Image 1 (cartoon, rainbow, N blue to C red):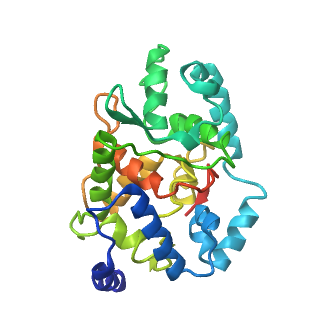
Image 2 (tube, rainbow, N blue to C red):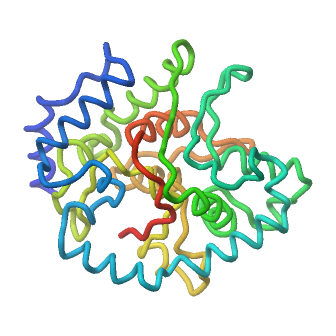
Length: 286
C-alpha cells in the first residue's frame, strides 16, 4: 500500500487534464497514454482487464473460461428475465442492447443505465422487488442484467455524449473519477490510470480503458460469500461502492428506487472510455 501511495503521488503530475477537454479528446489521450505505458497490449485486449497485462493470470483465466463459473447464474438470469417479462420494456426485446448503455435521454434530461431501466421495468410490471429480493447490485437482479449483457457479447460499445447537459453529466463523472476521497485520499485514477499492473495486496490493478466491458461481472471474492450460483454476480455500481469502501469513503446507496446520480455520472464517463471495445460480460474477475 505504501508503494502505491508513493507511486500515485509521483505520477499525479502527469495526470490528464480534468477540464477543458472534450469526451473525444479524453478518449484519444487515454488511448495514447496506455499505448505508451503498455506497448505490447492491443487495444481490443484491454477488455480483458488484468488478463491483458499478466501472462500468468491470463492462463488461469483462459482455463476458467473453458468451464465458466458464471454459466449457471446466467441461465437463472435468463429464466428470471422471462418470468418477469423484462423483454417487453426494452427495444429488441431486451436482447443485444447492452452496448448502447448508458445513454443520455433528451426528454428527461437524464442518463439512463441498463440496471436503472431494469429496476424501473420490474416495478412497472408489478413485481414486488422487495419480496422477490431484487436488489440493485447483486443476486437475482445482477443475474438478469448479466444475462442481458451476455446477449450482447461481441457487440461494440458506443456511448454518445451530445453537447449540452449530457456533457455536463459526463464531466461530473470525470470529476468523480479524478477526485480524491476517503481517509486514504485516493481517486479512481490513482489506481486505474497511474498504477495499472501494480499489485495492491493480492490484487493487480487494471486499466481504466476496458473496465466496463465485462459488467455485470462474476467475482471470485463475491463467490466465496455463499453456495448459490448467484453469489458471485455483481453490477458495476456495486463495484464502485466496494472501491469507495476500500479507500474508506462512503458508499453512495440507491435512494427511492433510483441509482445514486454520482455513480450514474461516473458510469457514463467510465463507459465512454471503453468506446470501440467489445462487450464480453459477464467476465470472471478477482
